Length: 330
Ligand code: DGY
Image 1 (spheres, rainbow, N blue to C red):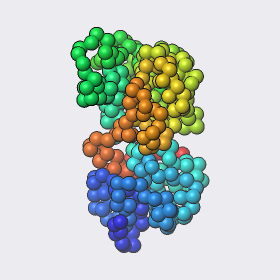
Image 2: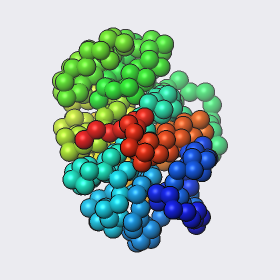
Image 3: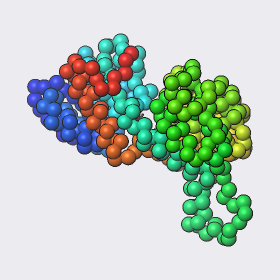
Image 4: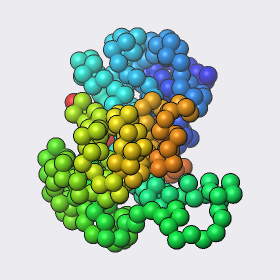
């Protein structure tokens, strides 16, 4: 644990964040901050103690910022900065009630997340993990005509569930693979974003029916919770590949297991699950047609440092009473 003492506003940082953000906090001369100097999450009880009386809080997505935590922090807390684009770990209602401003980190991670989405899509559709396992464990007998065949992007229809910056960035990267058509669904049409990738707005039903590759890019909200369920999977083609790099909570995992194990859909590539980490004995891990990554979409050195720097700058600006670089307006 590191503690830097002074009379400046007090800030608690819930994790060892990448160096660029720490440097900004240290060199600002604007705050005294205490850091949970570990790569692992701060235990909840410890967190509830540490936040007492702080003016600012910099957290990551594993911390649940709810009424209990805000009560423990008390009325000094004015600014919360999360080092994430997702904010489903924040109780927005409680934060709003207390007038606490919120910083978050969109945009700086778009490239990294889009890149990883393409990677997991190809790993799933071309069965790369299965293939390397076979090569390593003696399954590689001879060249066989249909062995380890998968599905290609050329001439395919790619569906995007939730079209935002990340969905557009994914489509831009997939277009050179000769995708035939991009379709998307969202709460409403998003013509400005869609025109950049020539994507057609369709209903959720049509998205399920037409997509050869369905990429989930929406935020987790009460409206999108388990939106990918039996009903959706049952409409998908049995040659379709399902990809989720947004939040595990948008998927009903029992229904996904059923769809994958019965051949209702061809494969799934997931960077996010419920819970995280997914227990190693989870049924999804038994399926060869399911590729599971440990929430690494934004995990490049450049991006994580940029997220850390943005989170630090949001926090400092918020504490100065200035507009944040990226502020979530409630
Ligand atoms: C986020 O920022 O919300 C991503 O899930 C992790 O980078």
